[in-house]
Amino acid sequence: MTDMWGYPQTAGYQAGNDLTGYKVEATDGAIGKVDKHSDEVGSAYIVVDTGIWIFGKHVLLPAGTVKSVDVSARKVYVSRTKDEIKNAPEFDKEKHLGDEDYHRNLGAYYQTPRNMPR
Image 1 (cartoon, rainbow, N blue to C red):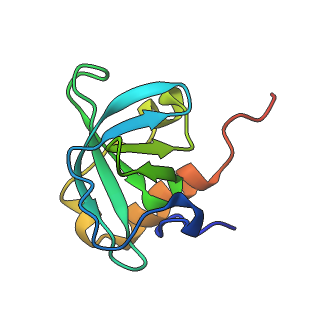
Image 2 (image 1 turned 90 degrees about the vertical axis):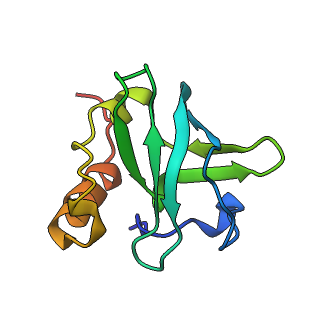
């Protein structure tokens, strides 16, 4: 089981790097820019401003979804599709700051494979 709330060691993220403003790429294209991020142990994440893609919404992606960080190109690549991100539980900027149930539910959503044949 992957730790959804920690950056994978293979992602190339260095603690303390400011990802704010980095472009975010899903497996099937651009989804927005990093509006906020955290590298707090056990609850690391990025908040993505999706702009017009999903009507100016923000989405919270656990750090475990980060596939790689390209510092020179200022891009974060995540291992989820646009649809997976679009259909994720609603971002709640109040709950994400310490609500363990919210983190557990969001982590479970991203932990569960979505591309399984039906």
